Length: 295
Length: 295
Image (cartoon, rainbow over the protein chains, first blue to last red):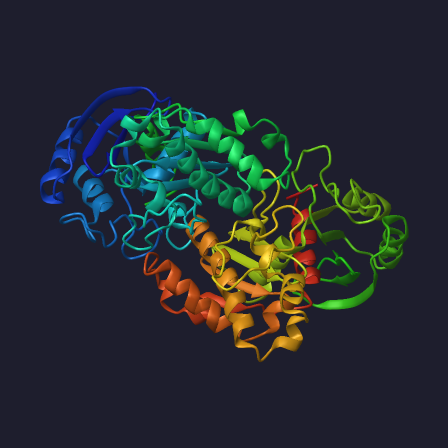
């Protein structure tokens, strides 16, 4: 019989809790607004209390501590979200429910979901890029999320300016890094209205693709991913995909001619699990925890 | 009894062959100029013929095919070196000697050497950066080299120009990528003399550090390495290390405060195996081949 798995996705505005199994079936699901942990975490625990889950997987907003064996493993790192700095999310939930669990960044969790169920199924090195309120990347190698000393933060690489762009950038740390120039709020601030209302303005998406293609090139040259899945609110502008593919091909200029890059339409692809990535990736994390992979 | 291991390092100007064991002891060593494979490869085979090696490890100039199971596995890819395009180096040597073997890029091999014997011992994710005739990166995760669809080529990311730099760059593919602006030949062409003769020109190394720090930041944001080892001819200018550390810290601006980055002097460090990396990494590749890891 399949194990019953619990998944939690914590986002900037809402938290999703779900129950299901490793086949990807979702049997129950609830969401509520993100508040301080003293209010939000008891709601998570209450939701799972009578569901009989065997393990929990959490995909959380970063920065978080995912370094196994570190003192703060499973905690939120210092952040600007009210009350969440240093909050020990994983242990609080797992201890209350008496089950094992694992936690990763929201983007690594999404990457794991796309690797297991979605558009990146089986890719040896899979890169997932989300472009929304922020710009984040997740990486799995043979289905294992990459952490290193922290976790990937590929939206914060430097950017070569588009010649027509005078916008100063929104990133509080780096100003005009890729995230600072190309995330949803940057589009809104530069052009005076949200991306959704700029759909027919070609110059908006040419500039956006200029920046996102740089991020993709950086990742290609660094880890040579076998496939790249892109998702998030901004990527719902479908015109971005052909523009990004064209710009990446121009920038790389034949330097990485591999079977994978011969067909850019199947190399850089849209997420197919949009909206369910956190839950499905959470099931995989929970399943890993049962197999003794973490905590 | 320790297995007898053979290592081959093919470089642009010379080839080194050596015999030793997994403790890192080198018992025999020979080098000769790089010529066409019909001349160079028989010399390799002849050197090893009476040495009784149990396996061979090759660190080769790129681009090469390191994708296990691919038709060209162990071959040089299309390149500009006379006669080497598509040459099946690994199988030619291993078949002649009747032993197993493994092959990787020169930089991944150097990274493996630093992980096993050198300045990156035990780092979960280790990044090795070489700055010389070209700029290359190698990555190991838990001691396993990263390949993806090809292999890391991190010198070819885009560069944000230094405000005083008008040099067009030397890269035949990308012009002013990091390699095109900061490799040894770029320094020579921009300033009119080789780096070794520019040791006391502060502006040369400030500009060089500006570019190399961008490469380091890119890699940090992408894979969060636990340590970064830098080597190669250009890095012999010891003044580069403090300049790079300072520029990286400024660029990252507190975004990756980890135990590792608290002390930049131990986070970004010089290679300690300079000159022996190819041979020592070759022994590790040979040892892996004996354990059935490859080929």
